[in-house]
Amino acid sequence: MAACWARIRARLRDEVGEVEYRSWLRQMTLAGIEGDEAVILLPTRFLRDWVNSHYGDRLRALWQGEDVMVRRVDIRVAQPAMAGGPEAPPDFALAEPGGMQGLAESLAPSPSLRMPERPAAEPRSDWVVPLEARFTFDTFVVGKPNEFAHACARRVAERPASPGFNPLFLYGGVGLGKTHLMHAVAWAIRELQPARTVAYMSAEKFMYRFIAALRSQNTMEFKETLRAVDVLMIDDLQFLIGKDNTQEEFFHTFNALVDQGKQIVVSADKSPSDLSGIEDRLRTRLGCGMVADIHATTYELRISILQAKAAAARVEVPAKVLELLASRITGNVRELEGALNRLVAHAGLFGRPVTLDTAHEVLHDLLRAHERRVSIEEIQRKVAEHYNLRLTDMVSARRARNVARPRQVAMYLAKQLTQRSLPEIGRRFGNRDHTTVMHAVSRVAELMQQDAGFAEDVALLRKMLET
Ligand code: ADP
Ligand code: MG
Image 1 (cartoon, rainbow, N blue to C red):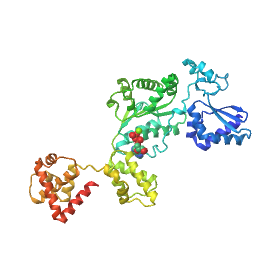
Image 2: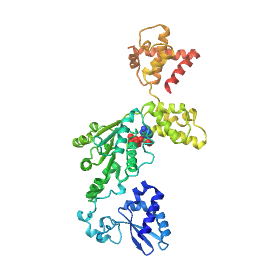
Image 3: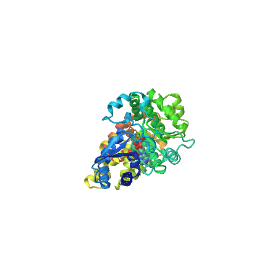
Image 4: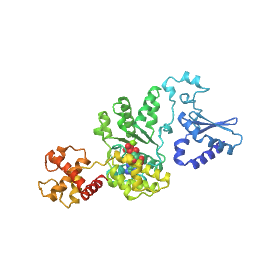
């Protein structure tokens, strides 16, 4: 029977791959065959349900291949008996409702009974939130704004808990790649050092689990489980702001792990010193390893990311379209990705290539929402360039027509393309009065009516500034 079971597990491992096997199936033990039923044990309800729904049929088929008498597989929640030693008592606290329940209830209330002695607790797999498959180092595009954070993450993945890098604190705005980097570290550790256990979860999840543990008087188990991991990653720590109990628990877990030489990786939207609402002692601890920020993307990085994502999707996207997206959707990478995905989906759906026209058509709402914010300085520079003037001519007192007219055009465009008030525009044009700006705006509008060539010129400038 043991040999059959070993073969079945080996088969499953081959079929699902190492990562999945380790996440979900490794903790299965065979309790025995009861009649036509193979009884398999898993330590938690969550794991049981998961394995049942994802691998139940496969397990049954594999059993039947080994032993035709087995017609069913029953997966139960229980700790395995300890190999070799005397029969371990069943773990009543973990047993599912059923035959033993009455007994379990009568025995359960005392916390010491609920937590039977176990050899250094294996972190339970249901603590390990599934990692996003595409969040790996391979798919992370490195540029100036994130190269430092990326290098730190790599370093931690290769040599967890090395001095100076523990904890690793990653911070930056929304959608800039914090979660991506954390998952990448987790994937890399799983691959490079499969013996290490990595627990990744959001701070929110940490809190919910802690609260649930408090409620069910199971905090011992909560603590033990977390303290048994080699690498603990907590994403979006800002969720713990103001949650004093949870912070306290996190602080103790944190200290226990660091003392044991385990690695901690934390992300947040702000640096430790700017995270108000975090206890000082925790803040100090958070800042004493490596703190790395991910800066807002640059145009170059946005272009590289778009190129990489288009290539991964195997869709040809013209450079002009990438430039449009990179110059207009500047907020975060998630939005950028969303826009590209929409284009790609649209192209696939209609079997048409991606062009600048389809991009404008498909993304018009997004592009409008990200109407480029042109600065007055940009306007002045473009206009000066266009009329072959120096930038200083835009703010000088010179009144010669060949300088004054372009200056008026620039004021007109500043009024049209920015949210600035007339007095503000005036100030930025060499401290001119708001009435001067008002005059310039109406004069240019008038000239555009009269002179088609001039109107075309202004329209062209406007278009250049807008895209
Ligand atoms: P955060 O956790 O900082 O809010 P995420 O890690 O969830 O951001 O990133 C948002 C999206 O942008 C993800 O789909 C991620 O893959 C992508 N992304 C962010 N930065 C990069 C990068 N440098 N290279 C490739 N994709 C990135
Ligand atoms: Mg995130």
